Image (cartoon, rainbow, N blue to C red; front, side, top):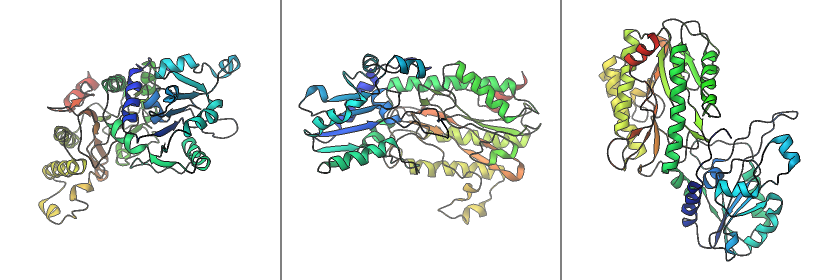
Length: 430
């Protein structure tokens, strides 16, 4: 891995918190992701399942974590299984975890080779009453592929049908939403790397440059700062491309007078950042562009102030909608009749701002969090309002990542990244 070793105390604490929420006499299992095939002998780059990563720090394929806090055999209360390594594997695939390095990474003392899983698990299941299985219950999840976790769950339930079954995901949703200080430091590093990339491309963008050239500049800066690369598929959308919310082709030439929307950010140690900025290709906004830009920025500032402990996500979005409505009225994009005649289920402002303002962020870009429960200190949210004007040939979105505080305003992890229109122009033209 490119990143510095993470303090194993984070994973020790995470396992302790998870175990404290488990039923008495229960066992929980977490699997690594598969390495997914493409064709011939090609595969996608390995991406670890963030749940086993959160609980162990192990960022390697074919790993399994088993937690059984009430096991009468104290050596089996936390067990990590990793793929057996040898000199041949080291030559062909590179260094893999040994039992010693697996312990150093995770803080788990009992480490077995994966080939011993069924034997050790058989002993553990004879002591327990309930299996915690790990299903994907994220509100945005839409998965058709059968995962390694899915296959294991099928095998486990078929092998031991007399055991009760419980779900790990509700526990993880609650725990992962509240970030540890170690996690916040890692997210800050991701944001700092993102800042370096953004400042680099402010000096690079000019008329006739291609969107993919900007993408290349960003990737260069991210990787040279020990990021694996983009936290998510980058959106580099000039002109009317910005009005396609998930535009990822990045294959058009930037034209003088246009704006370019950049929804691009780095990861660090698998923790994500999520940035959006919109900048003028020529280095200076037109009066109309700046007016809309400042309106979006004002909505962002007001929305950020609302991210406080006790706030409900649904009510928050209603209030942000009111602020956006006010700004659209000032811009002349809405009038009072539009408001009076609006559909309450799809307010008038949605014509220009059709997506949500905020989502949890952490190990996943759209991270875990129970949206029906009040916000808490150390939740981390994006704030990303936008106004999209296809008839005028541009769209503007601005986005930062903020940490909810116990008291006072949220802390902006991206507070050092330029956002004011005048500052953007000064840097680009300086």
